[in-house]
Image 1 (tube, rainbow, N blue to C red):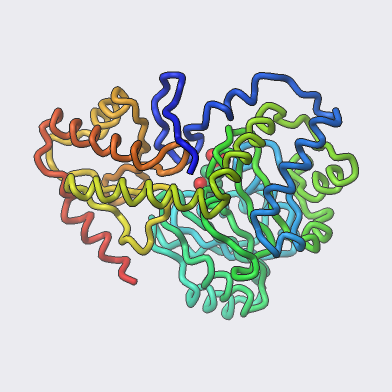
Image 2: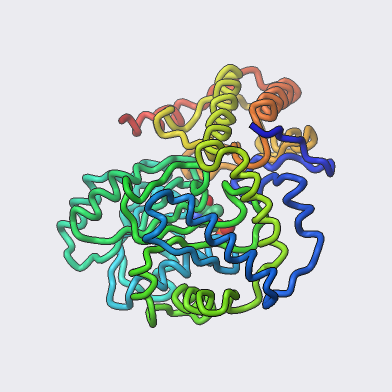
Length: 391
Ligand SMILES: *Cc1c(COP(=O)(O)O)cnc(C)c1O
């Protein structure tokens, strides 16, 4: 495994799910300018597309890769608008902010949809999907979130896919925070398209997203999109014809991404990256539990991407002070997104290893002592909440 070096520029570690801590060489790759129409940059775009496609394994031949300018949400909107025909109807599976955002996106551009809303974190299950699809023959597509970054849960994408295709419908996946670190082989989990972005598990800097979609879906997507700039079919057709992006590409971000892809490959691709993140999570969770903290999710549901911890019940605990004290020790964490109880999240992705995670845990321990928190045990309500997710 390549050596993970600490940030060279004196920055804090970003224990957040993207933007995240990138390698120095990724940042350094941005120190020159590129002409977007020039052959050198066109070759960079072609390489980026081919390398992302290759991550799908043997099934890659059925898919093509279309990068799209903007943050991840722009790419989600591009995918939904381009692949769901105006006459389509969508079942959105929501258990957190990103599922709800997908539904809100559909509302904006007026695609018929229903939402299975499981609340803050409970996973949408295959049997529930099967039931809803059986009851509503008008539904054409299911939209699922692979890792719901709001809680850090790894949703049961295989059973969701099986239920979707058993009912003769199509699956679109938001794999934003999972792609590149969580194994997803179309030969095992069927889907028409997935979307991810530059600044998550590939460890690039923010500036574009990308869609991996079946050739047949890309060809059939003509005329679907509500948006000129976010039309995946048009971007794909133009890119295949000219080798260029349709409008100004984020040239420096692409250069950084190619360096990030080189590091990804050197680490052993999806398996190697996923193993480091899983080790980060295990080290973090073990250390935090030893301090008395509790995770929102049972081990089975913990993604290797980000983990939600309950805030301690101790009256001396104050999240803002906790955050600031950790930042002063070089670690930026993430507030929680649960509605019923107080929580915070710690990301496991980016240029960090188990050594980093042990340092985070040590900083958390020091901070609790400094605040006078004697117990990290969460309130009873939090544990009652967690008991809702059993299998
Ligand atoms: C990060 C993320 C997105 C996109 O968020 P942006 O802020 O627009 O980049 C979408 N879905 C999931 C699951 C994510 O983790």
